[in-house]
Length: 282
Image (tube, rainbow, N blue to C red; front, top):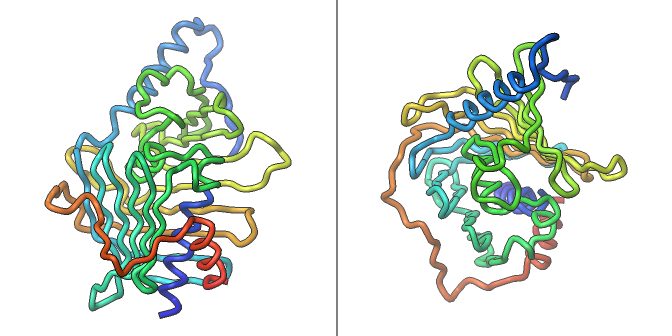
């Protein structure tokens, strides 16, 4: 059971915490306006690859790495665009839920079923989420394999802010004008598909990097969607890794979008529960 406490701990911490040389795509003699038009057309192509489905659900295989520890379990991922993200962790075979992470535009809910406790906090109250500029819409985009702009619920009007550069078979879309952090979206040029996202500080003295990788793309609602999502947080003490293997991906909306807790659950502050979970995971 301690392994599953560790799993809940590190998933909570992942939420609370948080590439090569490229050259501009410019051919000699090509007018600047033509280059800019081509770059914008490519950005629109990347954006057009986004899922049009209103909801996505999937069975999960979850593998967590915390330092030199590794824990695996099952789970479910349920997402409704613009409304909620639910990540449920369950015991293998019997399917009993041991923990849940629920994100809405207004708040983050972390439920510890084992100890009958929970945290309900705004994004501003979760220190590292606030520092990284990761609100609901940024977290949603990471899991839906989409471009995002911190602080905005839409991207189309901000496409001009992304700098485009290419190297080999890849094109990098970099958002460098956000406060404190840089956001890099590495795409496969031939498919205009996002394969990696990096978030890191602009300051050389600030360590820490969030990396999200995508693989094993399937077709969902006529659009590409990754069946494997790997989240890593590096260089902040012990490294964290959360690997999600998705199966039975569909567009079901037959599920409760909000978690209701009984009076048996005790509410804790983010500092209290995260501090306790750090001790368990350590």
